[in-house]
Image (cartoon, rainbow, N blue to C red):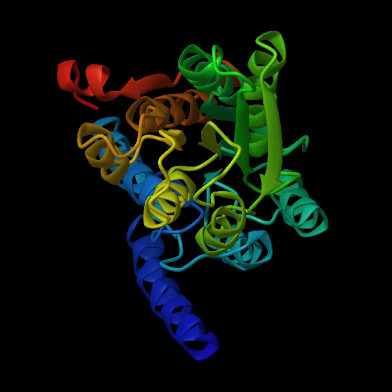
Length: 310
């Protein structure tokens, strides 16, 4: 696997070198996302390319095909730093290596190259703008939906599948649902799965047994809720659990429409991509722009999906 990763990075850098050479006379914007194997990031990458073309910007996408933690992304950032980059858009991977990120961001800051973050926030003076979903609001939406379904149960309880414990998105999504559960006197248990489908499977296998005490499951990312629902279904449990995810992936929409999953908190990756490109353009033009942009997600249940296209 390690050898395969080296080959993929080498091919990626070869392709990118051509792009940089071709665009030296224009404005070069580099984008490094988390991973193209993640559906959310794959969709975001395509939309960023679309909006960059619409707005006349050259976008060089260095997003790795396979998962890269922030240290691996730093290697790609180092490459971009030496290749005539005018601005860099970054969707940080997980786990977040704070020392590595700070060291790399320091170099961009010293060169006066603007850093624009998408989806995941990281505090650094070189970060000029941050565009993301309103994760706290999304967590509250999930909590409100779950509460409306289970609050009248005898002892309502929710299993919360967290992402990475220190990841800002995971923290805010959990905080949102916690606030609602506490307001509605609903018990909850938080178990961190580090955005890992494998860990979500092990947690679900242990806690979502045939006679589970939980009435609902909330996952901070859609693949986690897909795994949880499948595990509980395999136990043939008689309890009608509520399953709510967070992302808004097409696969999740299909499962909602077929009554396997109740809802997901759908992020608007289209709007996120458009805002990111427009703000980057303003930064380069030295125009006024908003430093922090929060984009409201929506609760997508079956009724919503039958009436709306996402």
